[in-house]
Length: 157
Image (cartoon, rainbow, N blue to C red; front, side, top):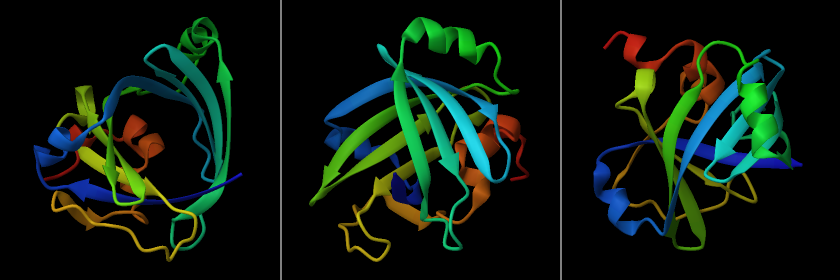
């Protein structure tokens, strides 16, 4: 139940031509304590309850537990969430032996596009597509829980 993940900004929309799947996501947070987050997510026709622990010093590894729940229950739980339900489209893009998940945000986070890749080891090598920008793995501003309370549109440019 460990997640090893790295996050990157996306330079342009070139990634869209390589996408093999996409889904619309709405997610909210029942808890955003620094030591743990409890997230409710509806992705197309499925819904999930997820608990994530605090990341290690590099921000790449943390505890993650996820359970599928009925969409109707997730819709009810979203009404109980803290401020700021996040809406985004997730694109899946194969790259070598991995798959990047690229999130294009809407609403108050419009203009933000983040790519994530899950790895089996923190130091695992992976292919870097030409649309992949600066790494932001250890920058908590790019965590969805942070974005729900501090939208990208409110950041100083």
